[in-house]
Image (cartoon, rainbow, N blue to C red):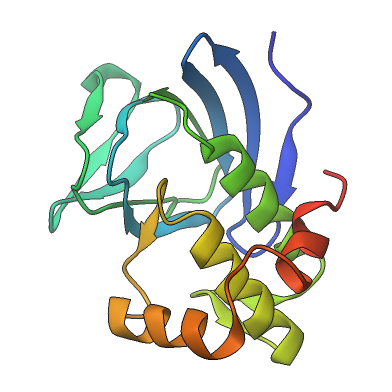
Length: 178
């Protein structure tokens, strides 16, 4: 059974989750102009399908437009990818994540911080509190997701300077209700 959707206003996305053993089923709705920035998963595989609408998918540097008739898009571990809705109507996607890891927590933490106004589009912190949250967030979720921006050296510096032990502002944002 799917969870209640959680909304991320910065990425103009909603997510609903259903754990499936060690895996995770995720339904994603991208509003017009919404999208998931380029990133990779070091250990997880994703299998995306478009349920309705058309999504712009960037996979290993190549951008394609996909719809419901185009079948499953396989994203292997370590492959950079992004999803966007450049259209005028909402796009509904589904994804199976193998194994789940803490990806649900990653998405709900990010959505909670977005609702609190801690960062702007592109992941840019809006304040010192937002920068501290980002450092903690990056440190806590590095096993699940590696963002393409800011560059890895900048992410490591942010974690080193602002702390990334999973406490403080990051823990506060992560505990916000969805």
